[in-house]
Amino acid sequence: MINNPIIKGFHPDPNILRVEEDYYIVTSTFQWYPGIEIHHSKNLTDWELINRPLDNERFLEMTGENPGCGVWAPNITYFDGEFYIVYSDCKTFGSVHNYLITSKSINGPWSDPIYLCSGAFDLSMYHEDDEKYLLLCEHDGKTMANMANIVEKFPSIRSFNAITGALLSGNRKILVPFHGIALLEYDHANKRVIGERKIIFEGTKLGATEGPNLYKKGDYYYLITAEGGTGYRHAVTMARSKSILGPYEVHPENPILTSTGKKSAMQRVGHGSIVETKDGEIYMSFLFSRPFKYKKGSILGRESGLIKMKWKNDWLYTDYNSMTITSQGMNRREYNFKSELPIDFQWLRTNSNKSLLNVSDNQLSIVGKEWIDSPFEQGLAGVRMMNHEFEAETLMTFRPKNHHQTAGIAAFYSINLYLYLSFGFNGEVTLRKCLNGIEKILWTGKTDLETSKIKLTVRNQKIQFWIEKNKRYEAVYKPISVHFLSDETSKPYGFTGGFIALCCQDLSGRNKKASFSYLKIMEGKNG
Image 1 (cartoon, rainbow, N blue to C red):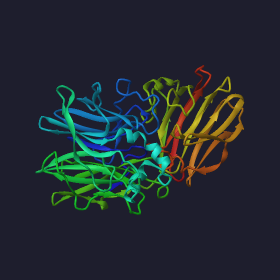
Image 2 (image 1 turned 180 degrees about the horizontal axis):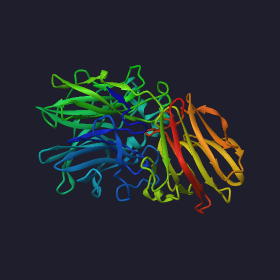
Image 3 (image 1 turned 45 degrees about the vertical axis):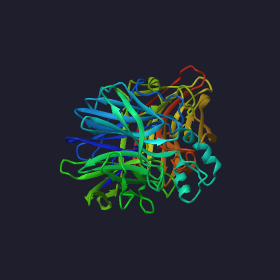
Image 4 (image 1 turned 90 degrees about the vertical axis):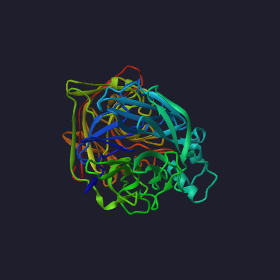
């Protein structure tokens, strides 16, 4: 029995690969740095984060990019002793560029990025003998760039994910930018694509056809795609053809994997890729979310799951009985800052922001730069929320010299969506809530401590902050719903997930530092 999620927290678009005894999954990181996460397993059950290959400016530079942009849907393959990773770098929703990196070892070093193409996303690579092909989601960049306006123009459509549903309901005033799955030949010897793209699959009535992966078995090419938009109509589609160029016939019981219409803790299921074990068993990786309520409160973002598949009449069928949902039991994550920043931590948009994070003398020192809503220079380090119930505690030392300098702890979804407890000049403490770019002060108070033990808790779908005084924790403000820190709330797009962030700001430009001694996270009902 498979216990899902196999990788908890914000780990969307999992793409799976086996090389001999080793399994690898790559996932999207969007605006978080370094880009692309690689997890490794020997048994498909226990997964460890081992690498993030896009770790400096020659690979990735996302300064100024909006939430929801950044690294999309990486794909990993292995051929003739070499790993290949293709990925999309979304600058705006109309401007998406695609690259390839290679390495003899999964741990690198990785080659310089090879530019492939633009005006498409969700690339994958297919190897057949000496030929290599790219599959991609062909889209209209001009329409894609205008999606935010579409969301505002049609009040009943509150997100990109709902557009497909509106189309299926007959609202044909909306121009959807998806044009189907295209094939493009790639010449690796000369590191360039060859010829023009050819649409080989226009998709099904589910719409929003993306996330292609191509496999060969027997006489057939099998094309697996994501459809329905990455919301509550999400699904995995399968089609086959005896020619790589098509035409492709759709699975007789399509979609082959979805949560649409199912009363399950797992929702928004889609974006599949398959792997075969040495024993010939077939599994599909996929993304899903665990909302608190239907269409509400996916604070953990889209997570990675796995399910068993079976061949029947030259088609794959899903064994829904092969998996279960992991109970949210007790777990403890403790981060001490001894020699280097723990691998679980990420920062935002650019490698240069890592220089603002320094580990020494058993402390994480964060240099203050711009405000927490800035897409540029920002002193912030965060780890993923992985449980619906948790408490996160840190010990912070901060000695501000003017009212431009602040530091603290945040429940952070994006620069447009956060809850931030900040400590400032003259002992001022402030709790701020930012909802889709509109920041509001919820509470202000005072403290005379330069070193403060602070924590945030999520209990019974409510979030609350606390400050220790006289060895006892006192609540800051009242508990408020945590649902807003989610994909469903983020407008117009929400593709990431909740983080626990330690941060510092210095708007005076004097580079004031805050120091954090540890971050302890207790997960579960009694955490």
